[in-house]
Amino acid sequence: MREALSLARAAECLGEVPVGAVVVRSGEIIGRGFNSPIGEHDPTAHAEIAALRDAARHVRNYRLPGCALFVTLEPCAMCAGAILQARIARVVYGARDPKTGVHGSVVDLFAVERLNHHATVVGGVLAEACGQVLSDFFAARRAAKGFEQGNEKGNDFVSPEFTDPYLAG
Ligand SMILES: [Zn+2]
Image 1 (cartoon, rainbow, N blue to C red):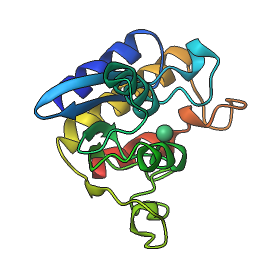
Image 2: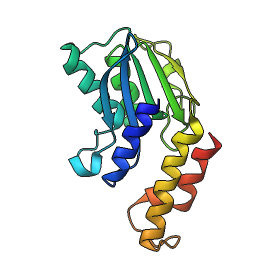
Image 3: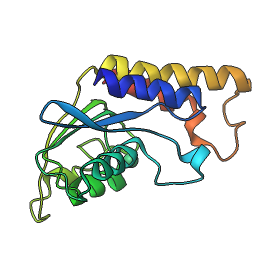
Image 4: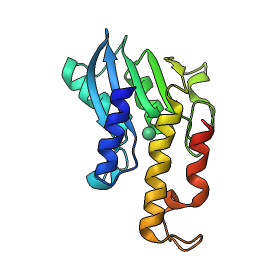
């Protein structure tokens, strides 16, 4: 998770929402990724997707059975889908995402029995540190933009109520 956190900080350096992820097999990191939808002009460029792509290329297999995915933020629906497609065995995440998290924050996709693959999921690992990097990012963005409530058009990332829930962890 510490490696995922340092990848989150790498995303932050590029002006992206700081989320990082790694894929681990037999104790070895085989895939790394960080959030980069803005720079990549790609709505699917979440940390988990990037880490899964990296790992799948590494092992030359689109299935990653027996692997664990560590990510600093609760996965969204898109990433949960990719995790299931990749047959990831275990997901470990840090902070909860009250807006798009699908391990119980909004819905619990991992608990849907009728889906054909199931990963075990554990949340709250280094949650405070993982949430703090997000809160710091949004606080800095608000400060830089001289944000006033209701003044920011088309960017819900910088709404004041967005950051604090991460710390509730
Ligand atoms: Zn996602």
